[in-house]
Amino acid sequence: MTWPLSQRIQSFQPSATVSISNLAAQMTADGKDVINLAMGEPDFDTPEHIITAAAHAMQTGQTRYTQVGGTASLRHAICTKYARENQLHYQPSQVLVSNGAKQSIYNLTVALLEAGDEVIIPAPYWVSYSAMVTMAGATPVILQCPSEQQLKMTPEQLEAAITPATKLLMLNSPSNPNGQAYQAHDWQALGEVIRQHPQLIVMSDDIYEHIYWAKSPLTGLLNVCPDLADRCVLVNGVSKAYAMTGWRIGYAVGPENIIAAMTKVQVESSSCASSISQAAAEAALNGPQNLLQPMLMAYQQRHNYVLAQLSAIPGIDVLPSQGTFYTFPNCQQAIERLGYEDDVALVKAILTHTGVALVPGSAFGMAGHFRLSYATDLTLLKTACERLTRFFKT
Image 1 (tube, rainbow, N blue to C red):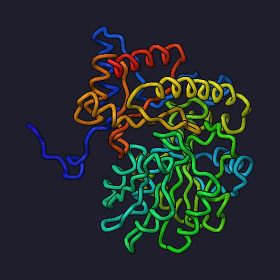
Image 2 (cartoon, rainbow, N blue to C red; image 1 turned 90 degrees about the vertical axis):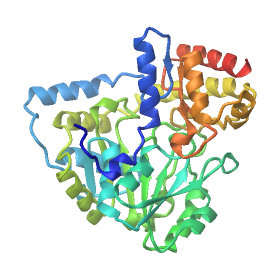
Image 3 (cartoon, helix red, strand yellow; image 1 turned 180 degrees about the vertical axis):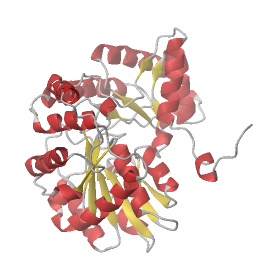
């Protein structure tokens, strides 16, 4: 018997990232040679001292439920991290540890939004933002940010999009899928707009903050506009920087009342994060940070290679990234020249004919693009770029 499902869940389409990866996995299972550049997951192993800390936690009986908001020692480590690295000061009561940064963001949408609320999301955006907003009953307001704007939202766009119903602004810097980062002057200009609308809360997704190589220092909204701290929630985690995606630890810091509301959501959904993973995350945040540098250098080397190869392909226009491990080329000219219907059809054709898995830009709210993840070995990237070059040139 087929049971009726909620209209809410029936309205959602499968994630394009997961869909492409599943197709790539099936092709691999069928014996085909596939290079998966669709998933955003570091190819490095979790550092040894973090694994050792997890093993010690298991061996010493740290295998029980923790406080829903996270262990006291991990929340203290998070506060220390923000003071040390970001010059921002929080108390443990302003911290929530979740099962990945994704859950932290979901907790925020459920705690904050209701029917009739609007949420501003600059596109291109991470695939789950708009889905989470819709699931919470609110309306995503998508702002197209083309390459002429460096794929970033302008203060004029933000001002024009704000209405009395606007409740939340979702930002991501450095950005998935495009690798661009807002600079101090960008934050200053956006902050001036945000100040004029006291009902507006800001969510800043900073999960890629350690994967950044631009010459100018990486700054956040609160570094430039500290007066907005009472309505800004910062989301982060250990997945990307420390190669800990499977450990599933994210966290959020912000105003105590919002964090308390997010904790209520987590109480009724997943409860606490894994005690073992929390011990590992604590070791990551408190341990040596210089281990991140070799990974960063590898990502930058890969970026430079991929950028040069894609830039030489007719019909592909690509901006240099400032961080993350993604590039987000505009392929609209190539789509038209090759006669494909859209970026989804193009990406499927690329996977079918070359075995290279990418993600269509429409999944990130911006059609006519694709996302390529270079979080993989440089040798594989060279092979992938050779295949892509042949595909587009023939």
